[in-house]
Amino acid sequence: MASSALAHSLISPLNSHSPISIRTPKTLSVSSFNGFSIPRISRSPLVSNQLKTTHTSLIANCASTASDSSKDETPIELRFPAFPTVVDINQIREILPHRFPFLLVDRVIEYNPGVSAVGIKNVTINDNFFPGHFPDRPIMPGVLMVEAMAQVGGLVMLQPEVGGSRDSFFFAGIDKVRFRKPVVAGDTLVMRMTLTKLQKRFGIAKMDGKAYVGGEVVCEGEFLMAMGSSE
Image 1 (cartoon, rainbow, N blue to C red):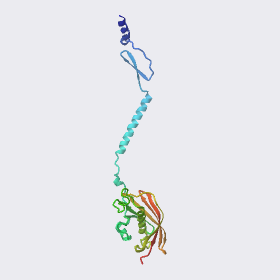
Image 2 (cartoon, one colour):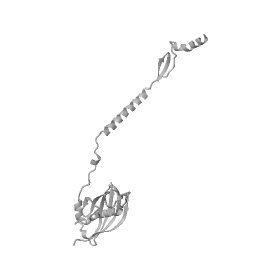
Image 3 (cartoon, one colour):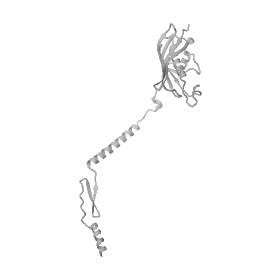
Image 4 (cartoon, rainbow, N blue to C red):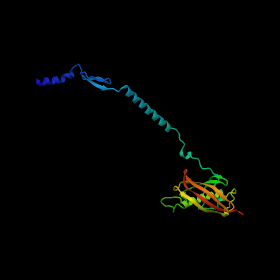
C-alpha cells in the first residue's frame, strides 16, 4: 500500500489538468506538453531582420558573381595584337650583311630615319646556341643580346639618312652594359636603339640601347659604332 501511494503521488502531477506555471521573459513562448508548460525561445524582431538582410545580400552577391562569370570574355589568343611590320626580314637582309646563324633581328616594328629603330628577336628553343647555353636551362647568352642590339643599331646607321655603308660598318665598343634579367626560350626580345651622337667626319656614332621582355628592361648599355661611306 505504501509503495502504491508513493507511485500515485509521483505520477499524479502528470495526470493533473492544471499545468505548472512557469514565468518566462517576453521573448519566450510557452507550450504545453502532457501537462507541463515548456518555454520555447523565439527570435527577436531585430535578429530576424538582420538574418533576412544577410540572407538577401548573400543571394544578391552570388547572383552578381554568377552574372559576371557568365559574361563572354575575349579569348587570350585574341587579346594581344601582333607587332607591326615596318621592315620585314627580307628587307633586313638587304641592309645587314649578317646571315645564319648570326642574323639576330627578325623584324623592325618602329623606325625613325636617322634617329632610332625598334627591332625584335623571337627567342626559340631551336636557336643554335641553346644546346650549349645551357642544356638544362636554356638562357640566351648576354653577348648575343648585345650583338642583336648592335644589329638594330646597324639598321639605323646603314640608312641613307645617316650615310653608312654595309661594306665598312663595325661594332666598335660598348660601355655601361647591364643585364637585368635572363632571356629564355619563348621570350620576345624587343630592342630599342637611339642615335645620341654622330661624327660623320670621323665615322663615329654613339647609341643608347635598351632591350625589353614583357615591358621590363633585361639589358641596357651605350654602343659605339664605326662606319664609312660607300664611295
